[in-house]
Length: 430
Image (cartoon, rainbow, N blue to C red):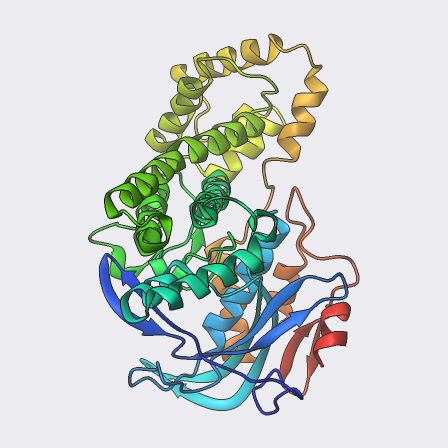
């Protein structure tokens, strides 16, 4: 089943149509190499999508073979599971199955199929498709389904579609703030890669930032424009949400002018919502338990120094967590010494003991992230040598503040597949 060779009884697999702005340009899209097996109800009563990625051609393959190479599928597996371990909303990877067939890209590569689990695959691009090629009733049906699927508590309100827009905005504000706080760069924030559930979706050219630099990109396509650079991610999220709001205009109000006003008011809230989540998270990373007006400039001073001295983002905050300023790339500069003194004074003005700040920082600053060079080492060993031990060690590293996997989760090889032991999920899926 996880290789796409058998369909579950009663299942009606489908490839979804959607549209999207890819690097700012609108185009018709769809699941060119993905197949939705169906919706599943977990033992806890949660509804999730089970989707195969790389299982072959679909009506939306646009001349492609619909297949996937082993390396990129293992990358999505590693990064999505690390994101989950770090407490960031994300799709999950249930399995990667080697197909035994080669796929042709720049070179001949081993093929594989990823099984992805998601709250849903409804995207901004799903609504763009309905708005451009469907009727208003099609759009309304899609919006009603989205409300029923993700926001059942807001069913009986006066303008439920405006509430839908506002709730999606809230979830994205939380998600993007979490990305920024751990230095995650998505790489391809096209509108078809923004899930309305608030989960991170589609791990293509993505990475965690090493040296702090807002201009960091991780897509070869984006090197010149830097549209999806780390520092641009909040702005792109707002832009994508504006495209989502445009699709809802016919549902927001019968009067177009009034509908536009409602949409603009809702979108204008994103910046403040994001900023509030980001600032709260940055206070936590520095052990600050209350609020003072100068906190933001104080935080920006640290980030500016990190950029100036090319300091490692993760390691800097971890060194501060254990009060080891000498372990940072900033140590030895007068400006950092002055900043560190201000920081100690700031912590001293709190009523809570220093131990509380230390505990807050431990819970907010990862000790380990899936560094890109470590991910590449694991992928090279797996793809070129068939050695999955490097990947297994990476998956079982202790991602602070949360553990990546429970102690019982071990990779196991089954008929060419690499399957993690998610016993509950496997029990109801197979």
